[in-house]
Length: 270
Picture 1 (cartoon, rainbow, N blue to C red):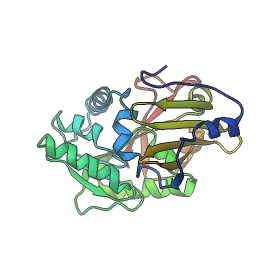
Picture 2 (cartoon, rainbow, N blue to C red):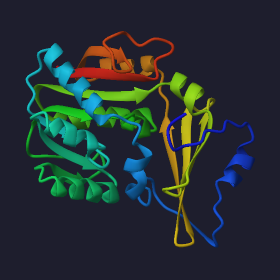
Picture 3 (cartoon, rainbow, N blue to C red):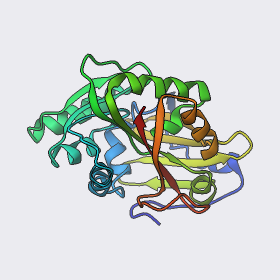
């Protein structure tokens, strides 16, 4: 159980969805990571972005990649970028959510950190500057719901990199969805948000419904992620301009196994 949250597995989708409802007169549906943005860092407080940055740093060193300029796609509120910046890397970041980007900018301004942020979808991101590495963390690639979008992402990233540039991304596994998010209900009474997760095993779609109450209004975001078989992703990569340097389970250098919750792909541009 995560601190500050209450988990309640249940098989009755309609009953738990109704349990999400706050006592309020209005309900407004908003795009993902809009109204949630101010609460996101609190919701993710169990994540150690410092350890995540340590892992990336160790990957660069372990494989002898020469990396200074990093582009982070789907950067959220900039927590990982800040940790990597403090390790001496130069960061340029983007996220499709304007609201998340504004919070990232404010965090860096308060800390006097020179990190560039741009509100842009990862499939559209472009730069006149070529990078040593592109990263896309915390299963953001799972938000690409079709293989066509995966291919577009691989092609887009290849245009952002210098020759022999590195692309690192991770995906959440089906084991993670079935074990941790098949039927989950979370409530944070202090921040006033609720989240219900359920996994559509037939369509391989992970759903999260997040509701936040503010001034008598319920703001509802519906998030969807595609849970890809790793072999499907490897086949797409093999048919592209990328060479796989590593595919590791969780935050290790061990191969992905049947109980891995996360898989990290390490690719180099051919």
